[in-house]
Length: 602
Image 1: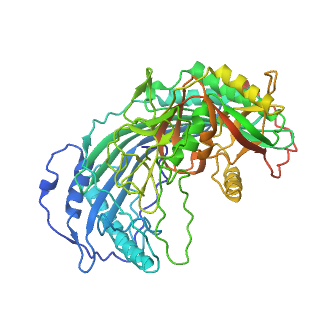
Image 2: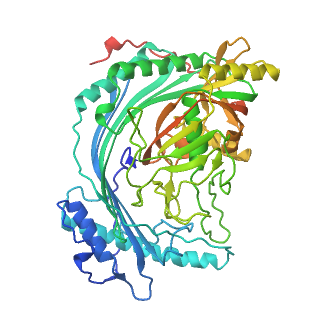
Image 3: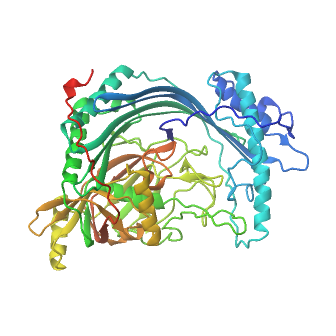
C-alpha cells in the first residue's frame, strides 16, 4: 500500500480534563519480542505493544488483539499550469493507526455501524512525533492505545445492545487467525533531483499553450518515500519501504453547446528512476491535448444499444473496474434499531461456482509476480495491511468464479485471509483489492478482426453503426458534481455505477470512424461480462492507483494501492449507452486572453 499524499497534520487535541486512565498494565517480560534492533521506531512500537498486551481493566473486557501501524516518510510535491509554478511543497509525516479488539475472534467490537469511531473524549495523536525519540514515541503509542481501547469497549457494548433487537442467522466470526509474519526489510533513501523535476513539470504544463481550446490545465507531481511499520499482539512484525512517484496531467475543455469535457493522463512508478523520459512525456501529453480538442469539436452521442468493442486500454480498464472491484466481499454491519446505513455489496456475492465469463477465460491475481515480459509490475507487494503475505490467487477458471479477494474479516463461505487487505475499509475492517490482475483468453482474434466482427454484427442487426470505446474515465478525473450525478443516475436505475467512456467512436459499415462525446453507460455491470463474444490477441497493461472512492476517483482518499490489470480487448454483445441529460453551463462571456509562452517568466 502507498500513501500518495499525507493527510494535513492536525494539532494535538487534548480532552477538556486530564484523562483518568482505568488501565492497570500488567508487567510483561520483554521476552515477547526479544530481538534487538537499531531502529528506534520499531523498538518503541515493539516495547509498547508488549506492555499493552497485558491490559486489564476491572469490570471491563480485556483486549484479545492489538495492532500498531505507522506510515512515516517524506513527500515532495510540485504543480504548475502553463509554465507557471502553482505550488512547491516538502513535507515529513508519521501517521499512526492503532486498533484494539475486545471480546474474542468469534465476537468483538468490529462489524458494527459504530466500529472505528471514537466515543467520548480522547487524545488525537495523528500528529505523531517526527523525531525518533524513544520515550516520546512510547508515550504517544500509550495514549493512542488507551483511546482505542476505550472506544472498543464502548463499541462492543453498543453492538450487543443493537443485537438484542435484531435476529441474526448463522453469525460469522468477526476475525480470523493468521500466522505471525516477520519481515524486516532494509530501508534506503532514494535521492530525488527536485530542481530537475520542477523544471520538467513546468515544461510539460507549457504544452497546453498550443491548444487554445483547452480551457484549463495543470500538472502535478508527487514523490513519496515512506516506511511502513506493522506490529500486532500475535507476534507479527513488518517493516517495508513503500515509495511512489506520480505525475498527473489534467485538462478541461468546453464544447460549443457548453458541455464541459475533462481528461487526464498519469505517469507513475514505484522506482524514481523508471519514469518516462521527456520525449515520451511530451508525446503523451500532446496526445491528450489533441484528443480533448477533438472531443470538444465532436458531435454529441446518441442513445445506443448493441455490440461494443472495448479496445486497447479500455479492455483492461473494463476488467479492472467491473470485475476487479466486485471481487472484494463486504459484510453488512450490525445496525442500531431504526438506522439504515447503505452498504455497497459485490455484484458477484453468492455466485461462487457460477459462470461469470465465457469458458475460455481465466483470471489470476498475483502480487508475487514482480515483472512481466521485462516490465516491472506496478501491483506487486510482499505483505498486506494485516501482516499477511499474499500468494497467487486463481479467481476465475474456464469462466467459473472460484473465490474472492479476502481479508481477516470472515465472509460468507470463507473463514480466512488470502492476503488481499490493501485498503482501509469500513466498520473496523480493512478493504480487499486486486494487485496484478491477469485476464487471459485461450480463444482470441487479431484486434483488427474484432472491429470487422463488430461491423458484421451491426449489419446483421440492421444497425447504422457500432461503437468502439478506447478509453474509460477510470480512475476518474471527473468533478465531484459529475461523480454525484453518475451515482444518482445509477441508484435510480437500481444498479452499480460505472465510470464514463472518454474516447468513443462510431464505426460505420464502411469502416469509417467518427468521434462522439457525452455518453454514459447504462446497465453495464459484472453480469455483462458473460456477454463477451470475442477477445483480442493483445495484452494491454493498465496501471493505476486504486482507492475506496467511487470510480477510484483521483485524490478521492488518502490511502491508495498500486494496481495493475493486464487484459485483452473484448467485444461485448449488448451494451447500452445514453447521452448526458443535464443543464449545460454557458460559455465564458469574455474570450480568454492571448498567451505567448515566451512572455512567461522563466
